[in-house]
Length: 459
Image 1 (tube, rainbow, N blue to C red):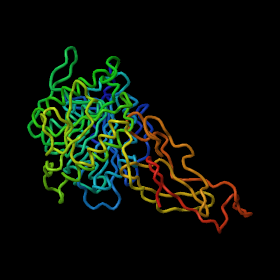
Image 2 (cartoon, rainbow, N blue to C red):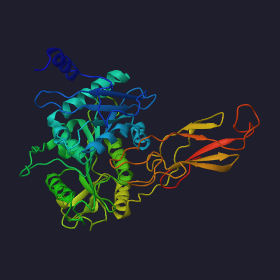
Image 3 (tube, one colour):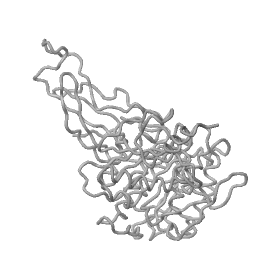
Image 4 (cartoon, rainbow, N blue to C red):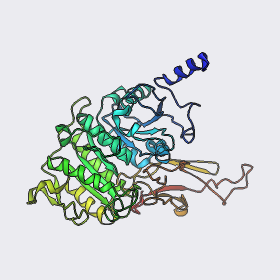
């Protein structure tokens, strides 16, 4: 028999509506990066009620410093499995995604569902199983914690990977009026049941047709590789695209020619695409409805779903003479040209240098600085200069894993690696003969430059 007092304690803990990260967390979720302003975090225990979330979940949000009123929230949603779920813990700390949020006065939010190994991720990636309500609850709680209550009501821009794509697409079907744009990497919602799988199909509301959508997947996910674990990704994307586009949806497809299920270099198209959509759709004044996506600047790509990689020639919509239902929709000429490069080799070009680092400080022999990422190309590394000569590179070898080498590294689900990279450099040699040990000479002048992933160097 269960001790009544222990049962009471258990029920009290699981009924906790909102709590900060605590010892109740279990590995591998028990050691997230710290969240201090401008980062804020809430964590919810699972519910034992039907149709409510059955997994614990932590939400971390980054608020751009000095922003007075938020205009929206960008959600970076990880995929299924322990590895992907844990990777969500660093999503809001990504400098590149923060640059997008900062430009539009948006919050950047990253959930981390604490899915046990081998558990059914449909219990969170289908938003009807409680994650929709919990997500919206987190916006209200984080808004109160951060002093931005408008976080609970601003529009959403959703990015999702794998199961996160199921979630983001499902949220589009449930709340199209709240959503500015949706990027679906290797995961889409389903409109038809799958035999032998307990996945509930969604209903397509008419309002969802007005929301810009991009389906993005790797060529090895059923396009060029027809068997294996991820071979069903393209067939599911094709069905979703056909259903949406045949009814006039603003939807495109971007096939990564280099990858399978990993996100690779997708951010170099996803961030400019979301930038274009947010620029067009976010209202000028908080509280106003989303603006309709303008159609006069759109470009179209002739598209054959049977040969999805065959068409790479975008055209202005005014010059397109084919069947719109068999075309990919792109919001502008700039994005159309970036799309054409991405589907060729993922090397989306960039002509602008990154912002220069700021707040460079020298304390003893430790050099520190701050930096914001280049919107188009992020940050690859930093150059340390002494008296006009390059002294070092930080990191010495930029981390390359699933895409271009990035200062923060890149995990499978498009988030920074752990431990997080630090903007600091310990100066060796050229020391003065003081009791302080190895410190630079007082006459030395140090500078820091940022280098983006396109190789361009800042001031």
